[in-house]
Image (cartoon, rainbow, N blue to C red; front, side):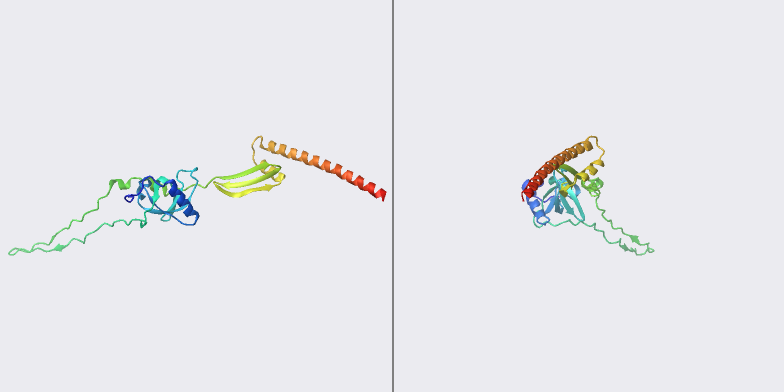
Length: 233
């Protein structure tokens, strides 16, 4: 159970901000599970990471024992000072074996020993203990990896490629040659995409040819001027 006086509404925005700063600094803030966390309510774990709240409602990653599982802020509160980790479970008390004592009566033949049984109290089993708990099934849940995105872009006369997995950038946009961009697009059989790339490349070739012709004309003028200067000499 959650300790008396602890908030049951989960972590506030201010507390989440403090936790985010602590995790960024390499610390692992301690939190306590609320009633909404199921059978582990009242126990303590350590926050080891914060995911993207836009992707899932359960984005606070908590280490509990040897597991690291995501929880929602409503499942957690800041652990009170001096709170320990797992609570020790009470062990059932078993009494000693039954004691056998013989009984005898005067004037009569001995009687067979009478065994006095000592009644052992059996621990009461809660009928709801075997009910499936929402958090118990979560321990076996394997979270799939985040999606991989590869982006081919064209802007201001340059082709770039970038890659990311979820919110993590694997490769920042870097420039590639037009021929490499055309080969990458050829692998994607999407109507209209390859045609659009070819149109861009055609426009670039036309512009490059125009610039080349302009440079040739300027070079011809310079060579003609140089020839005139040689004739004068």
